[in-house]
Image 1 (cartoon, rainbow, N blue to C red):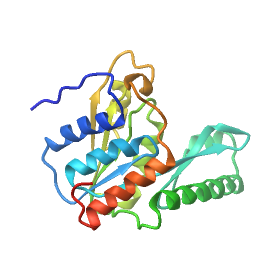
Image 2 (image 1 turned 90 degrees about the vertical axis):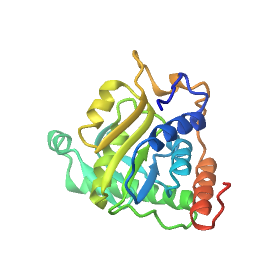
Image 3 (image 1 turned 60 degrees about the vertical axis):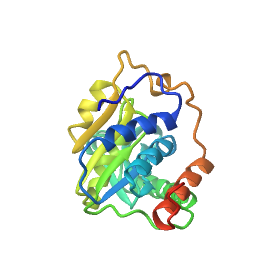
Length: 227
């Protein structure tokens, strides 16, 4: 049965439920794992994990900014200590190994701080040999999602599925070149920005992320099916 997608979504919960319904229609190979990009991707990913009865975890990506031009990315780091560098930018701007290591150390510290805060001491969800659904509340340029997919490959998942409620068609097409599959509910044109396609696009807080991850963990491990 086709999913009726009507824009704008009321909020991330409604978007997540619609995305979960689309994914639940398809045939899936176990085992599964759902990873959300914080913070806005977590409420969407929670609904997907709930529908598929799959574990939920956070997957963090931090940009590595060029020293002195921090808005320009020379690479990224992700959960699990994976680092991806843009060799063209590094070479063109002659960024030294020492500078790369300094920026990396700073961002690794922040990534670890956030992971510990979000997980409350829980171990990361298993990724190796799992079919991983990587979820965000939408894509614009797709830079963070692209870095996440590339980093995720280092953990040797069985497959990486990018799943989002809304994105520009060209971004989805680009993502299809690096992910095993892309599921996007809507590709409106002109796009402008992700927030335009939600009536409520208020910021997701750290406390909300912690609460949703905690609820998902309890459901999977402590047998609370009503959560």
